[in-house]
Image 1 (cartoon, helix red, strand yellow):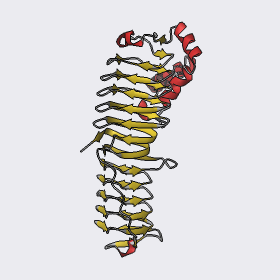
Image 2 (image 1 turned 30 degrees about the vertical axis):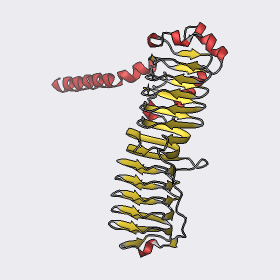
Image 3 (image 1 turned 180 degrees about the horizontal axis):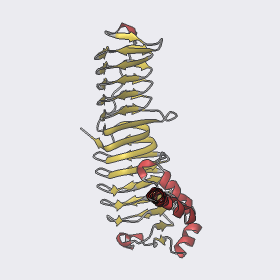
Image 4 (image 1 turned 180 degrees about the vertical axis):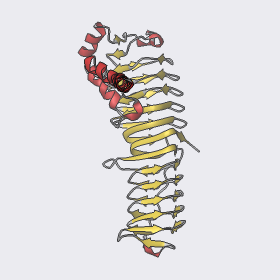
Length: 345
């Protein structure tokens, strides 16, 4: 009897544990709760204008905007927008004409503008989609995302610590702070000096295999153990990997990609046709041009009059922190995971 009792007790306990384990699955099957769309955070979408596109799909035309305002999904901004109470908006706002603000405005709701948007100094916005040009006055801020179908201009001291994008160009003046920017042309401020003329001199053909510590991995790839210095005025064909620190002399041209583990200094007027990647700091001096992606695990310093990417070949510049001197231009995406700053000497 004791044997049968133990077996019965064991089966009962096993059944109880099995029921407890399968109960959530049974409840989910009978009453599903995961059918709702997942919330997509701004940091986890591959397209920088994803949220602008979502907003645009909802309120693309004035007639749709009016219909949604009538159904109380949106509020329509009055024609006298300077008298509108932006700060106490309870729903997303739609402006059916261009907006020009005469004073600093704080708005906690998303704003859709069918024309252009001209914000005064000290304007603070959450999310903004503009079908025309967009300008924010000095010391303004975008706390969420902003997209302009036209040109986006952030005046000095503006902050955009999420996402901003434009279908044409983004202009950020000095002392602007940013996180993720995307446009066919991203202008880092206005250069305080006239761009000097490039030094035009014939280049001397160089060979990575002649470098100290060089090891030819393939016909087009060379590995250098330790630090590496590329002389000025050379032309190299192929790609280079440096286990130490890399310095590229003035006007040198590399028709390939470059990787340096301990950091890289790109001299003035250097041209790299491939990518530039480093675990440590990358410093790009004035008038240098890099066509491929520029990626660092720490800091990227971009000098004046540098050009990264091309209009027909957009690129990506990514680092934990990015400091860009006024006058530099990037075609594509600039992503500072912690903070990016436009500065002027």
